[in-house]
Structures are given as structure tokens and as C-alpha cells.
Image 1: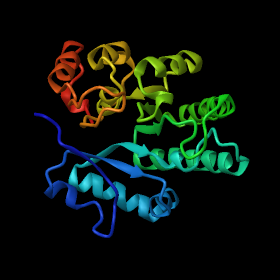
Image 2: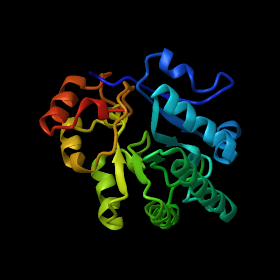
Image 3: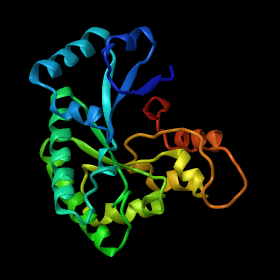
Image 4: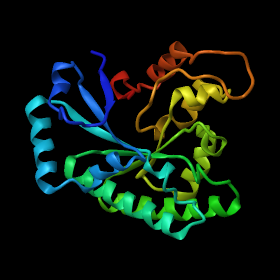
Length: 236
């Protein structure tokens, strides 16, 4: 059976509606808004309540989409922003540990609202290495998303970071839409990282490289994943 999933942000209605909506699992979203960031500060009672709801409904939360680092990036020129980035990372790892979340998806941006240069790249490298060490200590996987900017827009680029960090707790979380939008050979990119892919986002996108409008090569993607025995239920 194909697994059905959704990335959700828990609101007033809580989490118990997932089962009625026929989702097999969900992905927690912690984005750059103050409302979403506040979830990193949930009390022990709130965390316990959510774990109980997962057990009761059978709907798990295997992954967290941590896009808050777009606002507070490791590569920022502002030391206070970098400190906030580390605080967010530490709290996210702690929340993942408490809720049983196995994978935290990281945004592959050195900076987003600032100009990129060699300094932002170096600071990002330092922050990422630190983050992987923290996650490894809690046995939580960090998986970098293939992004909508040139800094990390392919698995080929991610591989350089993988070689540098050389950690079993550092993997890749390709967004097939972003891979396609940048004109990558999507099946070839998936083959390149197949043994290091933690999960996949599958969506359509508009191209950013000047080629004619196109859609994600879904059939080719599924064929590639099946060929390497990468089960469809893992494709989040």
C-alpha cells in the first residue's frame, strides 16, 4: 500500500484529526514564523500529550521540516543571528528526541536574506559541522534539503558537504521539484545519492534556468527509486 502523508503545522484543532484524514504519517513543520518557532518551546506536558496522540491514532511523525534557519542562518554576518541559529538547532534536536522524530530536514541555505559570499559559506560550514555533532549525540538524523537557490540545488553539490562531514548522521532530503527546476538530470541525481537519501519531497515547480516550462519527471523518478529498491512509502 502506498503511504499517504502530509506536512502539517499543529493548530488549534490539534493532531488527532490526522487519522480521520487517512494520513499514515505526517511531517512536523517548524518554519521561520514566531508561531511555528514557539513549538520548540513546548512544555513536557505538551510533548507527552502529542506522543500519546500518536500512539492512540497510529499516526507517526518520522520527520521535521526545520526551515527556520532561512530567517536565522548559520552563515549570517550577525553573530546574534548565528547564536539564534544554534539555539534553534539545539531545541529542534531536543524536541525530535522527545517526540521520537528520526529525521530533521535542514534548509540548504548559507544565507537567504543576506548576500552570499565566501564568508557566509565558511560560517555555514562551521555551523553545519557543529549541528551534525549535536544531532549525532542524540541519534537524530540531519538531512539537507535540495533547495530553490544555487547554493544547494543538486545532490552533486550536497555530496561535497557529505565528503567533508563524513558522518552517518548527515544525509540528503531531495526536493524533486527543486532538482527539476534547476535543469538537473533528476534520475541521475537520485542515483548519485541513493544510498544517502533519508526521504524525498515530490512536487512540481516552475523552471528557474530559462528552459521551457516542464513538469517533474515523476515516472522516471519512480523507476529509479524502484530500481534501487527504495520503497515508495519512504518517499515523503
